[in-house]
Image 1 (cartoon, one colour):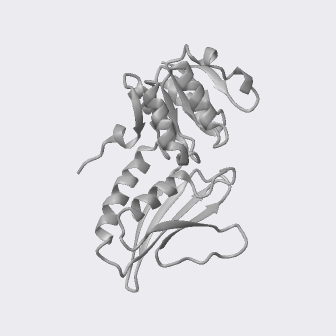
Image 2: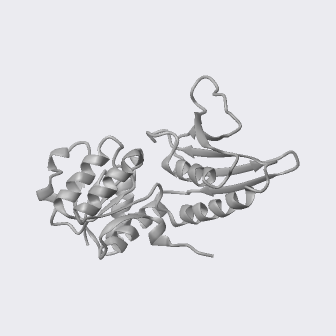
Image 3: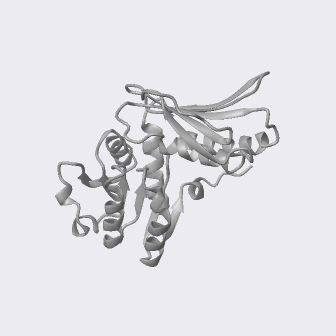
Length: 247
């Protein structure tokens, strides 16, 4: 495939290497220095685009790919409040988009186990639960999209939780957490690709479910696999439909 990379930071470079190793070609790389090159004419000859840009630019990137008629993989988070309108536009224009808060196989296995565990723990109200996420200091959003996915999946399965609240540990002051709120505790530490932990604790014991990324390779492989999977499909997809775990 001929691929366009929308966002050419550390993730973009990792994706580039995986794509080349799998026999694909990068025909255009877009970052902050060459935004003027991002036009429908420049990208319409590609087979797919992969977006790991910023929350501020992702919607414009999506619209340009729809205009060019090329499949788009979106790994950028921070735009999910517009999911329904983007989905409608994707389907009405007969385009293809697959999005995920995290493309790593290991993280998506983690997501599946987290949902199963939350369904079980719904019976045991003596356990309090919280989510902890650790990322590098360059990460712009807090909490991470991965942490939000984890938290949403817990809230949807625990009757005693109605929503989540975020506390960034490096910020001054403490937040007040209500019993019906799920805490997402965010840490920003140099050169940490990503660690996510779900903790269920009671007076007598503690259960932890944890995923630690050693590097960005897992995210990059998943994004390239998603571009390959999307090639012969039309429509709006979440990565759950690609992995399709069942037990």
